[in-house]
Image (tube, rainbow, N blue to C red; front, side, top):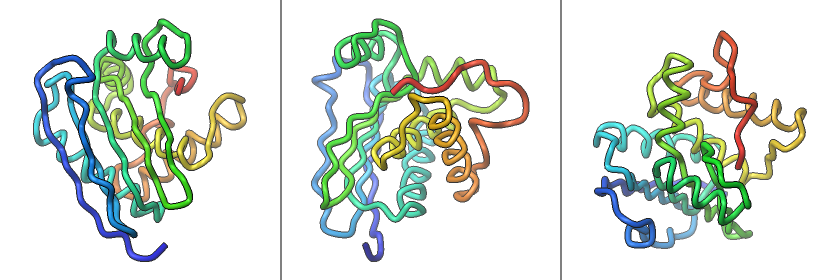
Length: 187
């Protein structure tokens, strides 16, 4: 695939309907990666947004992926509505992935729930940005052919998440020492 040129767009928005807050990401030129990260909740600090966008680029480079990744940070209510609409499940979840990729490269939208990230981060002793990054990696892996429906696939996917996070210098996040109460990600 060649050298990955990168660009990242990140912005914080005040709470508003998801349709109004859709981020438009320009189609990247061949061999480039474009990340558009939007915090619909307005709860992330600019430093957290920049960190997430930067680490997201590192993940894509590490995996030699090119194309477009759009990340939208939403709350429990918005996630529950999306989860119901797309998967017929009214509960909230951590991450939903919408993969429109083709042979020309990555084209993925990822919705990450900040409320779930805050709950899990507190439970596991790390910050919410790190938990949100785990959700971004999870979405990228879904777009790369991984699935987590069967137990063996779930274990393989979460091990790969931690391998990637370790490779980019963040460290294992899903399988850190101590029990993890959630049975996996529903996306």
